[in-house]
Image 1 (cartoon, rainbow, N blue to C red):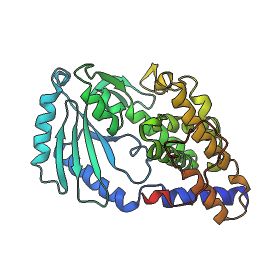
Image 2 (cartoon, helix red, strand yellow; image 1 turned 90 degrees about the horizontal axis):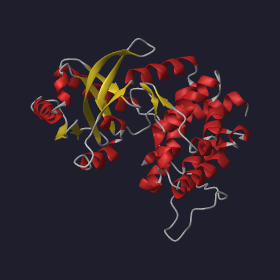
Image 3 (cartoon, rainbow, N blue to C red; image 1 turned 180 degrees about the horizontal axis):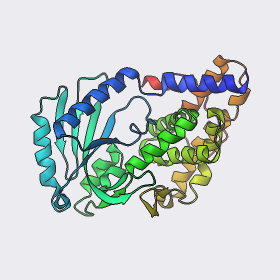
Length: 334
């Protein structure tokens, strides 16, 4: 197989097995539009789904709800309770539950093929603008946590109150869209990388600390620095760069150049970094073989092997990076 054929097979693999399904996108769009109609505008999507870098299945969506009253920062709970009541009485189909937190409202649906929820997070529009002349926002810091970690952050709020932070969600969306318009391999490569990271997380749960948005920004920088790069080369390069990415923070926040989105790497201990590097080495050992695939069947086996992450039995010790896991299956079936 030549390089172009290999790249096309990988892109097709990502589209068919890792990208959100069209019917699921239609479902999510309907829920989003119903909420926007209820709230009277001032809403927009945030996160990986809005950047078209989310992988299948999409279990949650963040909606930023722009609020005009700055006093919300003094008592956000009261606003959230009123918002939750409005949503409960809205008649939007499929709502199973509406959960009120101090700084967000979670809407849980049960009328789809998979579990799905929407978090509505308030935001205050700032006078500052990003490089695309779009506004920056002040939001509860909870927006920077994934749904799983938000639960723990809320539980700890009495000890460490939840703060409001400056953010540029529209800037990240605009930048990702522009880069993909320039090279459509961008989102395919990110989704494959996120697929690997997802199955590492599924296997090792909280022991695996490598963050999805961090990995996404590694791909973003690589494509920015290498216009026209293939999906194949981007996967190999970004997987190969993971150990270096754990050494120190490298990616400044678009809204605040004094903040790093990968600041968390300073807090990782040796065992946590070793696990990430061990799994990275196993994936990388297969990834570097992708350009040598002789046919699509062999290529699919390699791709499946990279995503086939399995946690060893408790008695095993994960210190060596020499063993390559290669048990092809369909990881997207979970």
